[in-house]
Amino acid sequence: MSETPVISLVNMGAGYGKRTILSEVNLTVERGEFVGLIGANGAGKTTLLRSLLGLVPGATGEIRILGSTPASARTRIGYVPQKHQFQWDFPITVKDAVMTGRSAHLGLFKRPSSDDWVAVFSAIKRAGIDHLSQRIIGELSGGQRQRVLLARALAAAPELLLLDEPFTGVDAPTQDMLNVLYRELAAEGLTIVMSTHDMLSAREACTRLVGVRETLALDATARSLSVQELHHWLTGRSEQTPTLHQKGTA
Ligand code: ATP
Image 1 (cartoon, rainbow, N blue to C red):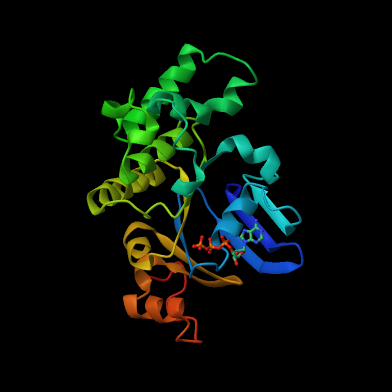
Image 2 (tube, rainbow, N blue to C red; image 1 turned 135 degrees about the vertical axis):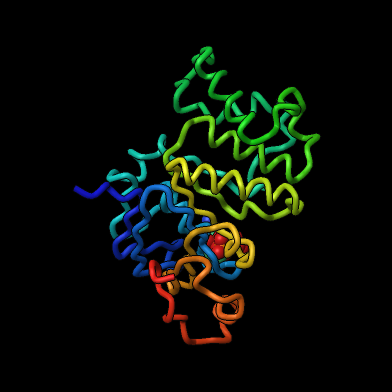
Protein backbone atom coordinates (compact mmCIF):
# COMPACT_ATOMS: atom_id res chain seq x y z
CA MET A 1 0.00 0.00 0.00
CA SER A 2 1.39 3.43 -0.89
CA GLU A 3 2.21 5.94 1.84
CA THR A 4 -0.27 8.74 2.60
CA PRO A 5 0.98 11.89 0.84
CA VAL A 6 2.29 14.62 3.12
CA ILE A 7 0.30 17.21 1.17
CA SER A 8 -2.74 16.56 -0.96
CA LEU A 9 -4.61 19.50 -2.49
CA VAL A 10 -7.61 18.85 -4.68
CA ASN A 11 -9.24 21.76 -6.47
CA MET A 12 -8.15 24.11 -3.70
CA GLY A 13 -9.02 27.78 -3.78
CA ALA A 14 -8.13 30.67 -1.47
CA GLY A 15 -8.58 34.40 -1.28
CA TYR A 16 -9.39 37.34 0.93
CA GLY A 17 -12.96 38.62 1.09
CA LYS A 18 -14.29 38.63 -2.46
CA ARG A 19 -10.82 38.58 -4.01
CA THR A 20 -9.66 35.20 -5.34
CA ILE A 21 -5.90 34.66 -5.11
CA LEU A 22 -5.63 30.95 -5.91
CA SER A 23 -8.02 28.62 -7.68
CA GLU A 24 -8.07 25.04 -8.97
CA VAL A 25 -4.87 24.14 -7.17
CA ASN A 26 -4.04 20.44 -7.38
CA LEU A 27 -0.87 19.20 -5.75
CA THR A 28 0.49 16.05 -4.19
CA VAL A 29 3.75 16.12 -2.23
CA GLU A 30 5.34 12.92 -0.97
CA ARG A 31 7.54 12.38 2.08
CA GLY A 32 11.11 13.67 1.71
CA GLU A 33 10.43 16.00 -1.24
CA PHE A 34 12.02 19.45 -1.18
CA VAL A 35 9.65 21.65 -3.16
CA GLY A 36 10.37 25.21 -4.24
CA LEU A 37 7.23 27.27 -4.61
CA ILE A 38 8.22 29.97 -7.07
CA GLY A 39 6.36 32.97 -8.42
CA ALA A 40 6.44 36.74 -8.65
CA ASN A 41 5.69 38.98 -5.68
CA GLY A 42 2.01 38.80 -4.87
CA ALA A 43 1.48 35.57 -6.85
CA GLY A 44 0.00 33.81 -3.82
CA LYS A 45 2.91 31.77 -2.43
CA THR A 46 2.40 32.86 1.18
CA THR A 47 -1.34 32.40 0.78
CA LEU A 48 -0.72 28.82 -0.29
CA LEU A 49 1.59 28.15 2.68
CA ARG A 50 -0.88 29.73 5.09
CA SER A 51 -3.68 27.60 3.61
CA LEU A 52 -1.64 24.49 4.44
CA LEU A 53 -1.60 25.73 8.04
CA GLY A 54 -5.34 26.34 8.02
CA LEU A 55 -4.82 30.08 8.43
CA VAL A 56 -6.77 31.34 5.41
CA PRO A 57 -10.45 31.48 6.33
CA GLY A 58 -12.76 30.35 3.57
CA ALA A 59 -10.18 28.31 1.65
CA THR A 60 -12.13 25.92 -0.55
CA GLY A 61 -11.59 22.45 -1.99
CA GLU A 62 -9.77 19.67 -0.23
CA ILE A 63 -6.63 20.27 1.84
CA ARG A 64 -5.15 17.18 3.50
CA ILE A 65 -1.91 17.25 5.45
CA LEU A 66 -0.59 13.80 6.38
CA GLY A 67 -4.10 12.51 5.79
CA SER A 68 -5.71 15.02 8.21
CA THR A 69 -7.20 18.50 8.09
CA PRO A 70 -4.71 21.39 8.50
CA ALA A 71 -6.04 22.06 12.01
CA SER A 72 -5.52 18.44 13.12
CA ALA A 73 -2.08 18.28 11.52
CA ARG A 74 -0.92 21.64 12.94
CA THR A 75 1.46 20.18 15.54
CA ARG A 76 3.16 18.11 12.81
CA ILE A 77 3.98 21.19 10.72
CA GLY A 78 6.97 23.47 11.32
CA TYR A 79 6.48 26.98 9.93
CA VAL A 80 9.30 29.44 9.31
CA PRO A 81 7.61 32.78 8.60
CA GLN A 82 9.22 35.68 6.78
CA LYS A 83 11.69 37.29 9.17
CA HIS A 84 9.80 40.56 9.47
CA GLN A 85 6.79 38.69 10.86
CA PHE A 86 8.64 37.74 14.04
CA GLN A 87 8.87 40.12 17.00
CA TRP A 88 12.64 40.63 17.22
CA ASP A 89 12.39 43.48 19.75
CA PHE A 90 11.05 41.10 22.39
CA PRO A 91 13.88 40.91 25.00
CA ILE A 92 14.42 37.14 25.10
CA THR A 93 17.42 34.92 24.43
CA VAL A 94 17.82 32.65 21.42
CA LYS A 95 17.16 29.51 23.47
CA ASP A 96 13.92 30.95 24.86
CA ALA A 97 12.83 32.05 21.37
CA VAL A 98 13.49 28.52 20.10
CA MET A 99 11.49 27.12 23.06
CA THR A 100 8.41 29.00 21.77
CA GLY A 101 8.47 26.40 18.95
CA ARG A 102 7.61 23.78 21.61
CA SER A 103 4.45 25.56 22.76
CA ALA A 104 2.10 22.91 21.34
CA HIS A 105 3.99 20.26 23.34
CA LEU A 106 4.14 22.36 26.52
CA GLY A 107 0.48 23.23 26.88
CA LEU A 108 -0.75 26.33 28.63
CA PHE A 109 1.30 27.53 31.67
CA LYS A 110 3.42 24.37 31.69
CA ARG A 111 7.11 24.67 32.44
CA PRO A 112 9.53 23.14 29.92
CA SER A 113 10.67 19.64 30.87
CA SER A 114 14.21 18.34 30.35
CA ASP A 115 12.93 16.66 27.16
CA ASP A 116 11.81 20.07 25.88
CA TRP A 117 15.27 21.53 26.55
CA VAL A 118 16.93 18.54 24.84
CA ALA A 119 14.74 19.18 21.77
CA VAL A 120 15.55 22.91 21.86
CA PHE A 121 19.32 22.46 22.12
CA SER A 122 19.33 19.74 19.50
CA ALA A 123 17.48 22.11 17.09
CA ILE A 124 19.87 24.96 17.98
CA LYS A 125 22.84 22.71 17.21
CA ARG A 126 21.27 21.54 13.96
CA ALA A 127 20.80 25.15 12.86
CA GLY A 128 24.44 25.90 13.72
CA ILE A 129 23.75 28.55 16.36
CA ASP A 130 25.02 26.89 19.58
CA HIS A 131 27.32 29.85 20.13
CA LEU A 132 24.34 32.23 20.07
CA SER A 133 22.00 30.44 22.48
CA GLN A 134 22.38 33.02 25.29
CA ARG A 135 22.23 36.08 23.01
CA ILE A 136 19.25 38.46 22.92
CA ILE A 137 17.42 37.92 19.63
CA GLY A 138 17.26 41.63 18.74
CA GLU A 139 21.09 41.71 18.47
CA LEU A 140 21.26 39.14 15.69
CA SER A 141 22.01 39.57 11.97
CA GLY A 142 19.58 38.58 9.20
CA GLY A 143 21.26 35.21 8.61
CA GLN A 144 21.36 34.45 12.34
CA ARG A 145 17.68 35.33 12.67
CA GLN A 146 16.84 32.96 9.83
CA ARG A 147 18.63 30.18 11.69
CA VAL A 148 16.76 30.99 14.93
CA LEU A 149 13.45 30.70 13.09
CA LEU A 150 14.55 27.41 11.57
CA ALA A 151 15.63 26.04 14.98
CA ARG A 152 12.30 27.17 16.44
CA ALA A 153 10.43 25.19 13.77
CA LEU A 154 12.68 22.13 14.14
CA ALA A 155 12.32 22.09 17.94
CA ALA A 156 8.86 20.59 17.54
CA ALA A 157 10.22 17.71 15.39
CA PRO A 158 7.87 18.43 12.46
CA GLU A 159 7.13 16.07 9.59
CA LEU A 160 6.44 18.95 7.21
CA LEU A 161 8.54 22.13 7.16
CA LEU A 162 7.20 25.27 5.47
CA LEU A 163 9.72 28.02 4.73
CA ASP A 164 8.46 31.44 3.62
CA GLU A 165 11.07 33.40 1.61
CA PRO A 166 14.03 32.02 3.62
CA PHE A 167 16.67 33.66 1.36
CA THR A 168 15.61 37.27 1.98
CA GLY A 169 18.27 39.24 3.87
CA VAL A 170 20.56 36.21 4.24
CA ASP A 171 24.20 36.35 3.13
CA ALA A 172 25.48 33.84 0.55
CA PRO A 173 27.55 31.63 2.94
CA THR A 174 24.59 31.29 5.35
CA GLN A 175 22.28 30.52 2.45
CA ASP A 176 24.66 27.80 1.22
CA MET A 177 24.92 26.32 4.72
CA LEU A 178 21.13 26.33 5.12
CA ASN A 179 20.60 24.76 1.69
CA VAL A 180 22.92 21.90 2.66
CA LEU A 181 20.96 21.50 5.90
CA TYR A 182 17.58 21.53 4.12
CA ARG A 183 18.79 18.82 1.75
CA GLU A 184 20.06 16.72 4.68
CA LEU A 185 16.72 17.11 6.46
CA ALA A 186 14.84 16.08 3.31
CA ALA A 187 17.12 13.05 2.89
CA GLU A 188 16.18 12.08 6.46
CA GLY A 189 12.51 12.09 5.45
CA LEU A 190 11.40 15.63 6.36
CA THR A 191 9.17 17.12 3.66
CA ILE A 192 10.00 20.75 2.85
CA VAL A 193 8.04 23.36 0.93
CA MET A 194 9.83 26.66 0.45
CA SER A 195 8.34 29.80 -1.10
CA THR A 196 10.72 32.10 -2.93
CA HIS A 197 10.87 34.57 -5.79
CA ASP A 198 14.59 33.67 -6.14
CA MET A 199 14.15 30.98 -8.77
CA LEU A 200 17.90 30.52 -9.32
CA SER A 201 18.47 29.62 -5.68
CA ALA A 202 15.38 27.40 -5.71
CA ARG A 203 16.66 25.61 -8.81
CA GLU A 204 19.95 24.95 -7.00
CA ALA A 205 18.47 23.87 -3.69
CA CYS A 206 15.20 22.06 -4.37
CA THR A 207 14.34 18.74 -5.93
CA ARG A 208 11.09 19.97 -7.46
CA LEU A 209 9.77 23.36 -8.56
CA VAL A 210 6.14 24.36 -8.50
CA GLY A 211 5.16 27.68 -10.06
CA VAL A 212 2.37 29.79 -8.58
CA ARG A 213 0.43 32.19 -10.73
CA GLU A 214 -3.25 32.19 -9.69
CA THR A 215 -3.05 28.43 -9.84
CA LEU A 216 -0.16 25.96 -10.06
CA ALA A 217 1.15 26.67 -13.53
CA LEU A 218 4.38 24.73 -13.50
CA ASP A 219 5.52 21.50 -11.89
CA ALA A 220 8.86 19.95 -12.75
CA THR A 221 12.00 18.43 -11.31
CA ALA A 222 14.23 21.37 -10.47
CA ARG A 223 17.12 20.73 -12.82
CA SER A 224 14.94 19.78 -15.79
CA LEU A 225 14.12 23.46 -16.35
CA SER A 226 16.73 25.73 -17.85
CA VAL A 227 17.41 29.08 -16.20
CA GLN A 228 16.06 30.74 -19.34
CA GLU A 229 12.81 28.77 -19.27
CA LEU A 230 12.33 29.65 -15.63
CA HIS A 231 13.11 33.32 -16.22
CA HIS A 232 10.65 33.52 -19.09
CA TRP A 233 7.98 31.81 -17.06
CA LEU A 234 8.56 33.98 -13.99
CA THR A 235 8.54 37.27 -15.89
CA GLY A 236 5.48 36.20 -17.87
CA ARG A 237 7.31 36.69 -21.17
CA SER A 238 6.46 33.18 -22.19
CA GLU A 239 2.78 32.32 -22.22
CA GLN A 240 3.93 28.79 -22.82
CA THR A 241 4.49 26.86 -19.62
CA PRO A 242 7.49 24.59 -20.20
CA THR A 243 6.02 21.17 -20.84
CA LEU A 244 9.01 19.29 -22.20
CA HIS A 245 10.36 18.19 -18.88
CA GLN A 246 7.56 17.34 -16.55
CA LYS A 247 8.13 16.13 -13.00
CA GLY A 248 9.83 12.80 -12.86
CA THR A 249 11.15 12.84 -16.41
CA ALA A 250 14.50 14.59 -15.82
P1 ATP B 1 5.41 37.99 -1.75
O1 ATP B 1 6.54 37.28 -2.43
O2 ATP B 1 5.36 39.44 -2.08
O3 ATP B 1 5.26 37.68 -0.29
P2 ATP B 1 3.33 36.06 -2.38
O4 ATP B 1 3.44 35.32 -3.65
O5 ATP B 1 3.72 35.35 -1.14
O6 ATP B 1 4.09 37.44 -2.49
P3 ATP B 1 0.82 36.58 -1.03
O7 ATP B 1 1.49 37.17 0.17
O8 ATP B 1 0.20 35.26 -0.92
O9 ATP B 1 1.82 36.56 -2.27
O10 ATP B 1 -0.25 37.63 -1.52
C1 ATP B 1 -1.07 37.40 -2.67
C2 ATP B 1 -2.04 38.57 -2.78
O11 ATP B 1 -2.95 38.53 -1.67
C3 ATP B 1 -1.37 39.93 -2.75
O12 ATP B 1 -1.99 40.77 -3.69
C4 ATP B 1 -1.64 40.44 -1.35
O13 ATP B 1 -1.73 41.81 -1.31
C5 ATP B 1 -2.96 39.77 -0.98
N1 ATP B 1 -3.06 39.49 0.46
C6 ATP B 1 -2.17 38.79 1.20
N2 ATP B 1 -2.57 38.69 2.48
C7 ATP B 1 -3.75 39.34 2.56
C8 ATP B 1 -4.69 39.61 3.61
N3 ATP B 1 -4.50 39.16 4.86
N4 ATP B 1 -5.79 40.32 3.31
C9 ATP B 1 -6.02 40.78 2.06
N5 ATP B 1 -5.18 40.57 1.00
C10 ATP B 1 -4.07 39.87 1.25
